[in-house]
Amino acid sequence: MKKVLYFTKNYKFEFLTAVSALVLYFLAFRYAADPKTLLSLSITITILSLLAVIFLRLRDREFYFIPLAEREDKDDWFGRGKFDYFRPQKCFVITDSEPGFIYSRCLNWSDYNFNFKFKIVKSCLGVVVRAINLSNYVMLQIGENGIRPHIRINGGWRAWEAEETNLKFAKKLSLDKWYKCVLSCEKNSIGIKLYEDEKSIFNREWVIPPGAIIFEFKEEPEGRAVKIPFSINLEYGTVGFRNSGTERALIKDVLVEKI
Image (cartoon, rainbow, N blue to C red):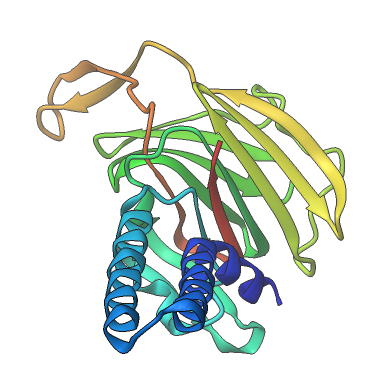
């Protein structure tokens, strides 16, 4: 039902154009005085309808709904590792994916809501936002006890614990339940809401820190460590998921909407 709803919403302009064309065809047939006039009106209506559809489809999309309920739902995602259809629960599984997977159609989006349903199978679920590519993004690692924010810059990581960011849960998440997550990315803040059976169980905010992050690199195994600052510039970018090694989670009903 939800898939049909978002399909209708997605193609509402096309449906409106088709209905308008049918009405105009009827009026042309009803009031045209001769066949030539009817033919001319029909051709004009067809061309105008085609131009209207092209114009509306070229407009920037306001939302994307990806059910992740079929293998084909992976077509617009790219990454490395395992992000595949999981038949027993009609959803996708993410695991053994060090860089993660991101959705290709929202790469230039800035402010948006990112909704999805998830179930942790082992350890956690890494949720990616503001992804410029697979080496630069924000990741919120949802675990059983809380959320650990991460920033990945040029492949390097900076992480914060749930306690220090006030993102610790009052009640531990169950590995046997599905939850709904709603992330609101606006400017440098990320609103985080979790729901269990439509009941709100968590509502916090995390602010992306400004400035630069210092990474240490060694010139060689026994060499001197060199500290290099990298500025944080994650004002736009798409969404995705990441689980490394044996971390494992299930995902479905992904919705990304501009705000």
